Image (cartoon, rainbow, N blue to C red; front, side, top):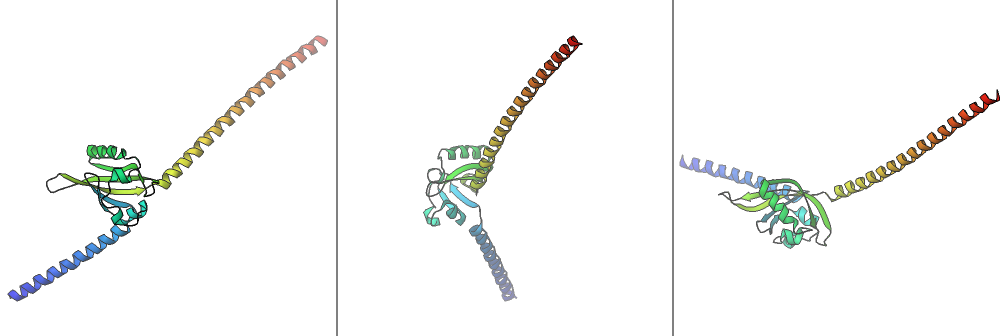
Length: 193
């Protein structure tokens, strides 16, 4: 009977281990294939974990080249923006779609939105910051182009409106002249008869 219980316990543990392995495989697959960038940094801002998408986005060769680098110094386009980000995170506890500009390995800017939060230890003390970064560079470029076209259309509309107003004023002057001419003709006509 004890042997049967041990066999059942061993079988239960094997099933739990298999379930855990399956879960780890699924998590790893998601982590390795995520399009947005997952990151985690210690409180000093040093990168401790990043998804492979971060390596691709920032155009580094491998994870080892990125891990340990300081976010503000090495990845923020304007390092002082990291302080503003941290103040906002401290105030709100969580940040959603906060716009920041990072830089690729070659210094090229990448505009993105980051959603982040603190990671706490078992006693509730913050030990890290983690989040998701989404590249919105193309969207921002498109928005800038649309704004440029909007301003251009507004300028064209102003010019056309001004031209129409001039035409209206000119038409009024012509109509007034015609009215005066008509009156003059009527006066001459009355004087002749």
